[in-house]
Length: 308
Image (cartoon, rainbow, N blue to C red; front, side):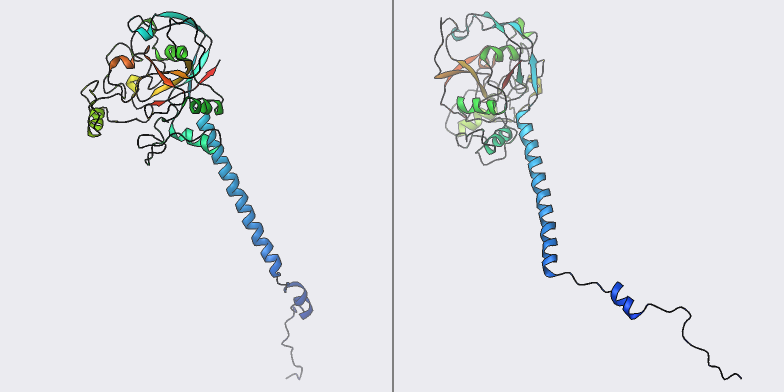
């Protein structure tokens, strides 16, 4: 037997202690560096959140401003009728091209305008949709003065319509040949407009105010309804609630058609009738009423127009 002792050392040596020290062991990050990394991460998250919020706000603003509109070409329009004193005589007017909102301005849109600094708060009350305490975001904004309505339209890059534009738009294509209502000649009923039916008479009767209903049916809304809730009452060109829901401000000062001049600005024409209307004639496309500039009532809202 050989006296040579075989080595137990492996033929491939591992790393030396010096190499371990220099390659595997790294200095621990300082507390300051860790804090900076955490702050950077939170900063990036914050920027993302702010960016997302601003983007969401921009969407809300654009939705509030850019509601669907119907375009009307320049036309010779017939307005008025010869039955009621305030609506006579029937006569022709020249209209430039314009567009009109398909629906009344809603609470949600008006709230965005307020948050953006373009509008002031409407009057408050149980029947005022923005301050009612209920979520009525899709109902028409009401309880606004003429100036508040005009301010919203200006913020949206629009304006209030003239009463002649409003009437021309409210007539169906056939109604321009003298049909009475936005949907035609059929009498108002619970399927076509939010007016004072059985539900309205009951509510106001409980409040101590007696109203004779326009019809005995229940339209489902004793006060305002979400806009476009009555598609059967829309015009043939797709404008909703041109009769009922809320009366609507126009930019036309109120004067008799027979007046030789109309140069005041203390009262304006409102159009369309509202949820309290209990006479069918108030829903006719020619019906007009007067409201003082500074008045704000539960029964009056508005929609906007644009030139061209």
